[in-house]
Length: 121
Image (cartoon, rainbow, N blue to C red; front, side, top):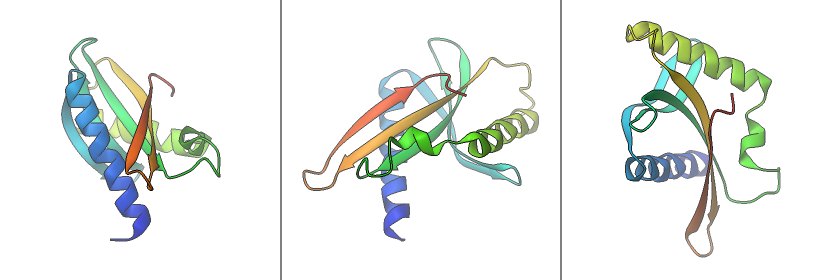
């Protein structure tokens, strides 16, 4: 596995742990279709919403905040993939939300910071 993939997988694993600790039930990971991919799909037990998560993991701010990588084209792919997921699972009439999770890793200290941006798309 390449370094970028390892960093990305670490960010997704950390995010899943965070979500489970904050009353989310993980429904799916890495859902793929022709429209794109969704990193994590979970059910928010507090708001009763299905939440589609885009996880962006970085080791520095050299290229800006991780969430800035979720541009208009990426947003369109996420939205279309979310619609397809809801259609496939026959849950099209559910309340949904799309969130972005930023994970910034300090590789020297093996620490990380997680920022949960709700309803950004």
